[in-house]
Length: 140
Ligand code: UDP
Ligand code: MG
Image (cartoon, rainbow, N blue to C red; front, side, top):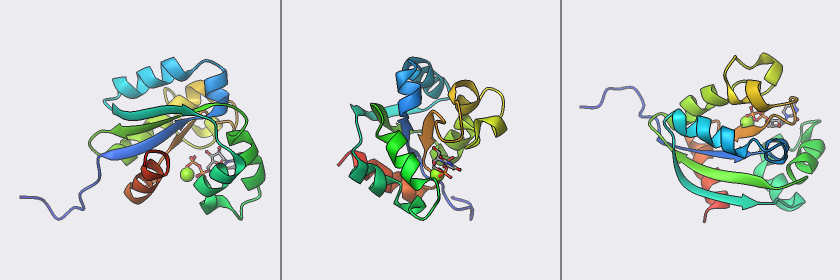
């Protein structure tokens, strides 16, 4: 019944980052997410501390931008959201656009709301495995 193609998951995870929250873009961003067919399964407004930001972005520990990224992610409130949709990870990455808003396609959330490669408005999980890890990180 199921084709050989690997089944993709239906869960992903997002963060409305401090720049977007501060600018008042939470409402419009959530509207775009829902209009794209994602269901909100869990959502919290939180503020990260350095330790949690470092753990969340541990994969980027050796990158030159790591320290600044952690400072930025701790600079104000954020919204963390668990999302559900068929093919969630891939479809959500398409919806948010490229990491650098200058490279993001028209109509994507980063094109519309991001200001720089660092302050790029929104996070999206990059794989089913990481979606699971990130959801458990914030909602366990
Ligand atoms: N980032 C940055 N400088 C860079 C690359 C990334 O400040 O040169 C920040 C940016 O906020 C990005 C996050 O680090 O969203 C994680 O980087 P990643 O390459 O995983 O991009 P994403 O998966 O968020 O598109
Ligand atoms: Mg990433």
